[in-house]
Length: 454
Image 1: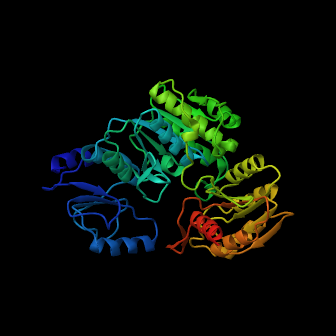
Image 2: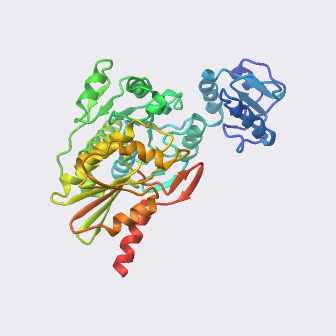
Image 3: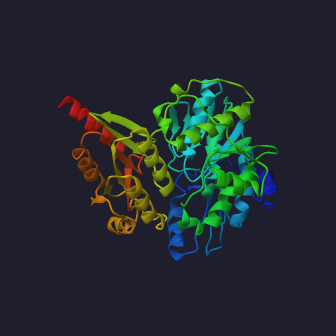
């Protein structure tokens, strides 16, 4: 609990008698004994939304980032740039960090797979950990909480660590460019980290590749003294660029052992090598593991045989991720035709849409173009952007993803691989703020089950 003296020390302001038991950033979750941090954007609609929400919100103290007329008496205005430090001081008192080894993983693609592999390898050598990222908060082979973001904000992150990090040896977390730039990981330093890849994505937010790189490179500032940043052996350009400004980057150890089919793609083998190097480094142990015991995370290279075919579901949603998985499929299944079904997310980097189409055309024999998460965009406009990159391949446009998937199933012929790309573990399609239940994995399982029984 925080009292007026604690708050005076943190905010450098004198308060009346007050007791604080919690901290929140969502008004609907705040209680009468909580501090609520509420960000008001620079537009009239955001201010109106704030006033509407605050009418029914409970809090002992409200912190906002801008001064607006008629703020409530128990409100204070603090520059947003100071929020991470202030929140950190509050969280240290209410939700102190557990004694853990902290591991950070960044990269355009591969973060989720690598964090899950770190968790699995740790378990196989007798170390208990948690992972925090796209798949939620996880223990080995078990999701504890799904929070719906790649990297949670500082408040939620600290609560997760406090609640689920007790009696654990390590925590591995995805460090997205957004999280690094927005300082969501404030006060956490990594004992070791990995940087898996760097290719085009998120230019709707970062504007240029240079700005995107600078955001990701902030992970170097999150490293403890002498901590290493592992880079896949194949990422020579990335390693070279990092080495020009830091001596922390180190090439991950190559693995020569026989590996399960999931690692037939070079990209996933890279992820495994970084995960292995991380665990080896952080615990300073020499160990041997049975790689056959490793499983892909949800929606990453999920593969099911069907007659003489294979159907694969993967989260690949960038040009580089599509290139890697298509290359891997062609290498793993020589002589098979490749069919690819994909779409692009709405309200995201539009420049990558024709690039994704171009990559698919480089590898696929046939293409199905459909929706992913349109969000607030017109699905037909997204598809129009995609079509600019289609070249010289047979393709079909079916905007409704469930119909597109069913059509692709019905058109399977002998010795074909069908890749359903972009959704992976997701169990919804997001349209204008509404999540409609849908899962590529469920569609595959039901299709195979029907045809086995039929």
